[in-house]
Image (cartoon, rainbow, N blue to C red; front, side):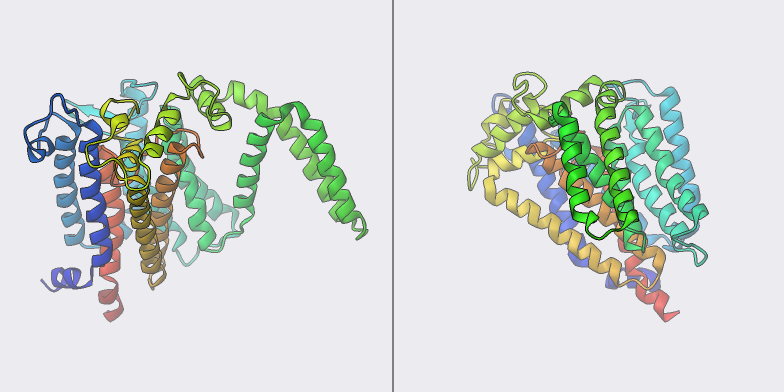
Length: 428
């Protein structure tokens, strides 16, 4: 009883309120995204609870999520530390089973189906990897400059990412790259992060200016030599020359990688990012219509259930990956700002909770939660407004989907449970 009372007293209510607000707002906007005035029920409440549409189904998922959150808060939080590796191994096994036996849907093998029940193990792999990473990095013997330790970290992150890529779900696999932010917080050099960003920029530049490869490379070499030659440092000049050679090599290999490594739909998404008008009625339709929907909302929006782009299904996947379009159209700039403010407040609060932890395991896990939510939030909105390619990333707590909602609930409430028991650990 003492522990249950402690959980109630110490759980961070602000985070719970933010989470609950997002879930409720998400449920309402899912209904708005599938609302059809020609077949609508006589009242809003009837439509919201109709199990034949996504809003009614999402309500069932919300009920399950609440039950799961309560279970997480009730059980002993030490279990998450002691079972971190088995949990990771269990979900890796599920990913392998999905790869071997799942049927292909829209070009990907991602779902385990048992009768009418189905779920996506890749979504749950995120919190499993966060637990395993926190367990390993929090060991007193862990050293950031140890090849063995960095290799193990790479395996914990890379194995599930590769399995998910093999399933054909590149978007979800990209989420695992954000664990580098967690390692950066724990003292890793910023060099890998900088290299990753520069590589992505060079890749996009090469697609944009590939006919001027040598001109760009020559300018870069000359500029580097002019800046560094005056210092008469052989090492500095050699570094510029080696870097320039690598850049030229990357420029030369981009076309090959783009053509042979990426699937046609992935190539199309990148081309739409670089040129939104490349095929507005074909591959660019989603992004074009999402921009129209958001722009048509103006400052205050058209009103709840009044969105024309949404009502007439101009935006595909509008209850899942493109749910932000419904918010932008029906609630305008004000509603969009409120949604963004909710996410920023939640992320800042979670950073505060992570930083106050005395147990390294909880801090690392907390930053994993922050990183995963930040990736989903920023990439989802970015791809809808044309800043990122469309990669199938749901908006946490807003997008329709049981696996998505449950995975984010588990991810968040494990951290809230660990944080709520912080005072009890200090007392002992």
